[in-house]
Image 1 (cartoon, rainbow, N blue to C red):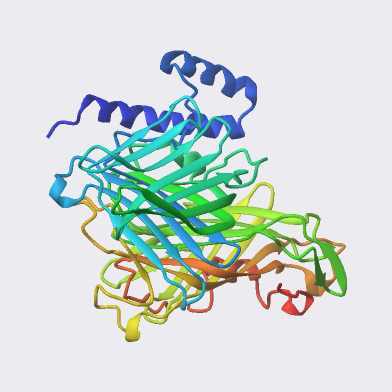
Image 2: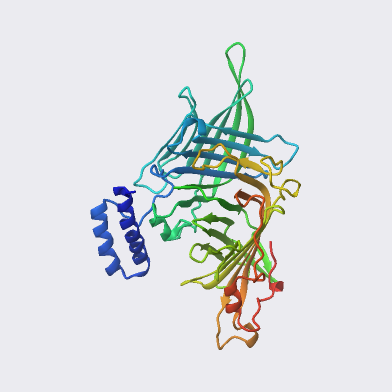
Length: 489
């Protein structure tokens, strides 16, 4: 079987672009700039700048996901998704909308609509703006759209059928909050890995971790006289998380967690000191089983709660290779010197521990613990569950499934540490240990179990207390700085 010319071109070009990106970040400009300028001449574009939120029309599947958390605690989800080259009867397109109120006494709205046509248009010369997604019914009438203007404002319009009429939904998201912050050199979870466009089977990008959102829902009733009566049903404000997936195939199993604390307390009491909190907090995790191994992306931003720290906030990203777990064949166990995963979907619990090293921060550690709704009757062997929102996923045979299960009532605890280096000025007891700088909690977090993760739990690991590198770095007799110096908020 012969490879196509475009595939061969990608195999040769993408590793070169990846190395070029590495050179751009780590080599002197007098070396990297001439090579980059020559590449721009040949390709007609700068290959070190990625436009990941733009449509990828050659990808086998592509999906745009938006979650809005309102000021009242409700969750709104909007999805535009397509699986290309799939026959109509297998539901190649999906338009999803759901409104899940914080109170069980209020009515929830859930719509899974399979449009006859879904178009994705964009401007490949810009990063994410000038984008338009449009869904059409069999009569060729638009039933939903997502657009992003040149100023980065995202607008959604949906017309969803209900008895005696339709629900007209208008959503606007402004003040984009990019991954890593506005000053980040790589506003992307993947970072340099985004250069491997065709060589990696799956990609994930977050357009905004917390845009300001305004939602309005009107019910349009068609009277017998032919007139239409418009009734305003809902008006909410909140914050929206916007992301997308695309690639050759969806993973066989996955986990996804997302939450935002848009308004942190103005001050935090830490070790009897008042510290001003100037930044919001968010946490996002995505990953799972792919290519026979496991890999994860984690983003975390939070005010620093330790009075002796030199910075007042952190914005961390953890990505492969530090977050890759390799399988021990035949044992059902995944191991890594840097990362450890523990989960039990039956109990609704998930935990990820990861250690990595950066030039700026040195060794750093993150421990994410999530507690969500347990599976239905402590069993996840059925398709139906009253505890989770079921979502169709873009599998290679279309959207005729309910492989994703989401709850928006999870609680997350994130603990962040930095390695306290040896210094002659330190006291003996403070040398060579982890220093906790953040102890952040999130409420009403999104927790999604997907594919093989649903109804399963991780195998018991022979080193249950920590990822291996933690023990190496702790040293003989080392221990974490005690939590009594911190107060979670």
